[in-house]
Image (cartoon, rainbow, N blue to C red; front, top):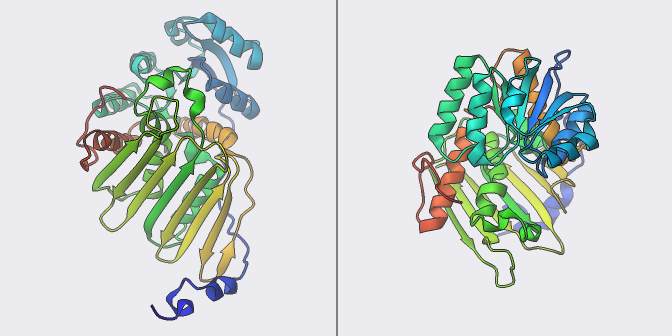
Length: 372
């Protein structure tokens, strides 16, 4: 077995690590300097509380809120933007010449037509995630956006969660060299979905929840193509919700792996942990929730822990919209564009198909999911 201190996992080696100043990296979202368009929100469900609260903090101008149930739209108007107009038909929002950008926060099935209508009305679009149920839809809508001179982005807000954003900037800066493994371990309580429509979604964890981790994996592994995805899901004996609460996924990159583990029934001692091992160092982020995270960088120089500002439910929702607005202002494709989101959905769809039949799947080979 050898000498533990020489083999690299002894206590003595850990004790020698010196504390160093954390690198200053640009992890917070940035806004365009002057561009502040009028924005319409289409869909007023529960998650839009975070959309509107953070748009208000950014000083954005939400002038219309739309929902088939006007009561929901009225509630959001009173809570956040009392001067906004309320509509029950999204076409009324799209008919307004003063609105340049729409945030479409409906469920996936009706959202495709609304996005198409918005692009044909020459509106820039931020779409809720998961973006689509068919990969060809992603390409079709992306092409339509290009034809209409519009920007189409996806609200993959985890990219701007402070800990994930800092980890990504550290990778991009070469601080840990080439990434070999990424491990996501998430223990949380999703039992709140019991009396909601989510309870009827068999692959709730893989589709609606883990899509954030599929997405951030593609960000961390930028420029590298996954070879296969293997996944399985199980029901816990104690669970009351219908969807399987346990899931694990392995994404094979040939010379690297991304591994994910989810337990959605942890009521006590919850934890969210990310470990990224590279050729020159290791990054870790851990905490009791998605919003409370401590990041540590380990290199030959020592250990560094940045003091990060903000949290996922603030910076994440601000960042998705802010990136779209910057892209419009700078006449470029947003980093969270629908076309960029294609690899995220390829991983997600492959994982669902693998969990269904127990066989590894090549990302991109599973073109659609008929039900989740």
